[in-house]
Image 1: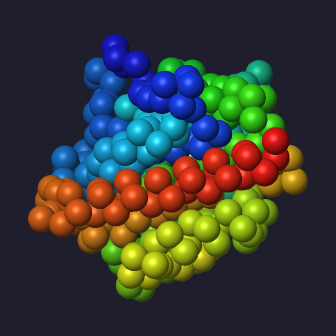
Image 2: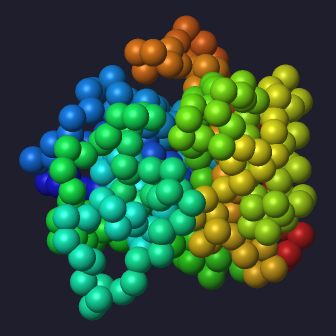
Length: 289
């Protein structure tokens, strides 16, 4: 990949607060030579289209925004680097690189390396060489987490606490690769790993910011939060990580992935919500001083 794999937007240093938004699935820059039998329309179904733009206004309130430029169908930053299905490999994984630990995500074809783009539609035409996956880890997955963990650590050191929103979008109805196949989803799904990745107060602040504007909110179903909030959320250490899934029907034509007529108004709602959360974080910082 010739361009940087991660984009980072920081506020003016004097205005920075310990609030970080990240968008791991909003990239669509494929590396040269990437081949797949999937069609462009199929690839777009796995894209968290425009999520990094929807939350861009958060930077104006002192928050930081980190986004992937590479696509999740290449490699998924929201999966552990060893969450690899051995069936995808064209040769054994070298022992020197560590053992593989595929999870239920890999079993459903949605591990670190995606197996199917849609139910019954393989993403890869042939097994993948382990060296290629290793390259994707080193050039995409690792830089993404270096950027995110670095910013979280810097802010935690400065403020002794940090609040983190992991931003995603979701299909309006689950398909056969999801645990809620066929179900109509809420407008917003918040995942805090059943209360283990963020304080109850922070999760409630986020939920209320949406419900007061008329959006329906579900908690930890069908999404509890993935590898990112699991890795960074340590509320006992004042590190709060919460995953937000936005129903794409709120701002997108799901068939074409084009912005809908409600895009700008929805973006303004998210900007207002980001402002509310920034005010909450500032209040927490003042109380701790």
